[in-house]
Length: 112
Image (cartoon, one colour):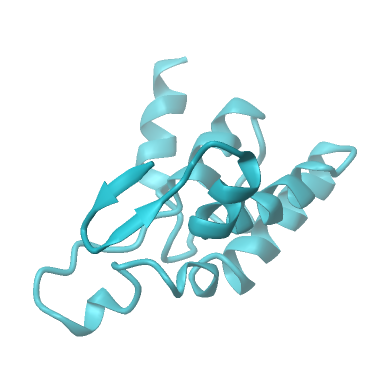
């Protein structure tokens, strides 16, 4: 049982995690993207995901629309950057997306 911050959540079963934490819905979307069979399809689907779904998929997160408040640091799709590196995907079609951490990906790639 997780207590605090005004809520009690029982986390003993996977369905409890999914019901209480929206992040898993986003992971389901990413899993769909990862089901692509080749690098070109992965690039196309990553591009579509980050352009069309990534930001709005986080609408229940505390930082959503934080650019409308003080203390905004940016929105970063770190999971897309990490998967781009791990799977060695050509990011040319989405590297200029405002959520994509291209500098971080470039730094990683410069090291290997």
